[in-house]
Length: 540
Ligand SMILES: Nc1ncnc2c1ncn2[C@@H]1O[C@H](COP(=O)(O)OP(=O)(O)O)[C@@H](O)[C@H]1O
Ligand SMILES: [Mg+2]
Image (cartoon, rainbow, N blue to C red; front, side):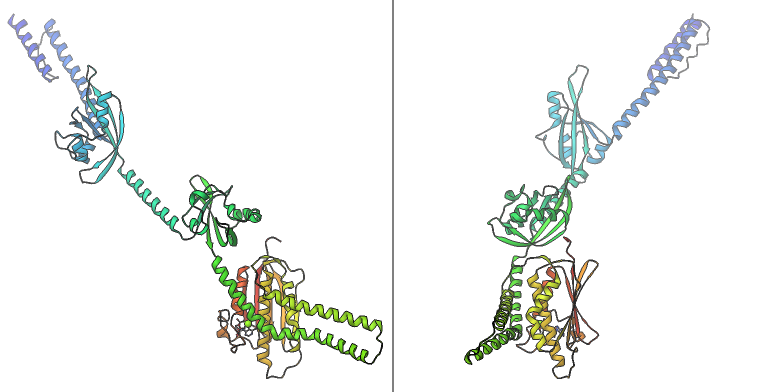
């Protein structure tokens, strides 16, 4: 009994105990073929099987623990008092909690629960809640995170804890703040640009946005002008023209605008296509040049008056011619009448005709002078520069002739049109002709000259995209050192009363206004050539 029953049973009982303790591979040495021997072997086998299962389970536990620890977000589990029951590594590293710490203390350093708490809500209704929170990390730096919570229930379905999962959004938050700040900065710059700036819809030209300067210049508040069409700022009859220019060009000079009170102002406009959230827009800036234009206008007028003065003697010559003809006819008639002689109808008619045409000529000259002296607003239009040259010559021709100055014409017929103000260009040509006259006088006053030596040449030609006008003289020429000074206002080499020094500087401005250029170069005859270039008008 002892050997075959009691001892093996004891061995089996001991072995079973060891297995229960966890020593799964315990050997139970019952070396018998009977039932007890088989039982011992079965128990040994069972121990091994349990060991295998146990290992598998442990591995799984480890895996889940590991997952819990390494998920790339912060996880805590809290009881109903917000005490931290468990947390993962990420949380420990970021917030360095004390054992038994409370959530609000660990996250935010608070002494009591936060007023708005998603964990509290989850305990109340058993649902998931979200919130965005701000606190300090263990280094004392402000930290932002997005929080979501969910309930943990026991077997009876009671909520015993809450799990809180947070994702750190500090970098994103900082970026947002930076973006906000830079947006504010650019907004401030946009608003404080001293020139009005408009943002227009590319298709409708509706004003989508504008800066504060718009009110200063135009009188409209932002609310009044936004949603209106930019074309509202133009005069009715010009709207059509500007609508197409706005869409196709980048620069518009001296456009006429109307402010809120209906007054006109002149502006230079710059247009650049741009992107505005989700749509194509035009960025338009305008600069008010009304005052500058007025000052320029006054200066031009002053110089015109000076030019008129310089022309006066010439015009006297010019008028002398018709007066002499009329006088001669008058004397002839008086002589005939006083001698009681009859005059042929033929002769009488011819004389009357001559007197009539000479009076017409004098009137024409006087009108031309008057017209020239008139103040006029600038109007750019399609003109033929040849016509301007001829018109200017009309009032100066006679005086050039009496001074023995030969004028040589070399005009290209059918010259393309240019966009300019013809009365102002006439002023330019008159200035240049008067300068040439003075230079010729200076050179030849004490020198013998023969026919053709005192000469002014007027040449026009078209070149690719430009019209070129050259006015050359055989006068005294310009010393090299003066070449870049002559266009300065008040630069003159002439005696007081003879020159104002305004002619070329005004001419320069006028030519620039129509996007042309002027340049003085010495020529082969020792004189000077002025070369003026204008872009050919695109609207040909
Ligand atoms: N055709 C020319 N030949 C020589 N010098 C010239 C000529 N045109 C202009 N100048 C020089 O340029 C100066 C400036 O000309 P301008 O501006 O017309 O003023 P102003 O004729 O009143 O002196 C003149 O004083 C003269 O010295
Ligand atoms: Mg002059």
